[in-house]
Length: 266
Image 1 (cartoon, rainbow, N blue to C red):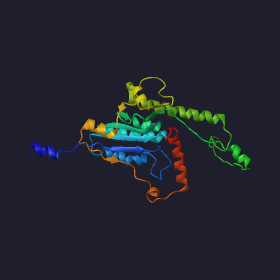
Image 2: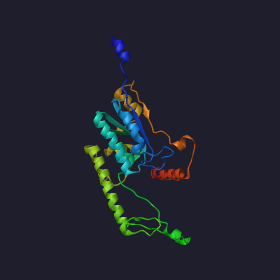
Image 3: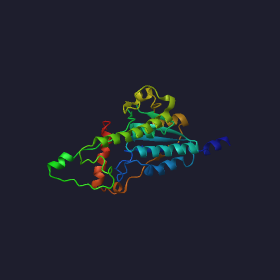
């Protein structure tokens, strides 16, 4: 009887959610962007049958702070409802919003070469007012509300607009810091963890942003045994990508997403 019980005993299951791409990224048609809406089915499925644990594998240079917060909050909400531990694994990059996602894990592991951190807020744009002036182009903007055209790229930069933007960034930065502090707590060590700097794997371990070096398959086998099941959950490709279609908007969107990766030499 014991032998039969052992044969029919279910193997431990740890669903693996892969979160790769720019968060809120515009490469939505190619299936590369991450958002709460696109990842919700994966996350809900992972927790559905109360598994032994859930693993999230992250490879993201960041993106939208709101989408980062929503995705991480969904993971934590389900983890607490189901009383399931979450393990986070960082690949090439888990920076900015990517690190926000990593904080959804109860334990965070990295590769020796992973780049993590960038706990800050960035906003970038271009100024085209001199270019359009050179070509005799007249910019016409009509608004109802005097602040509606704030930070217009075709108008000279207004110091008041910059001041307002910095005030907005400060609020988001404080929210980011609170997320990291609430999730990492006493593990955090050292100073200047929230100045937007980045660290490679072993450095991140030293300052307490992550817990150790580890890859998803060997780590999960180490914890749950060699017979652990690791079903992989990934986003479906977008409609255009599946049929090989390309739109001008998608090309531009993917170029913008590349800029996020290039900040980290990737």
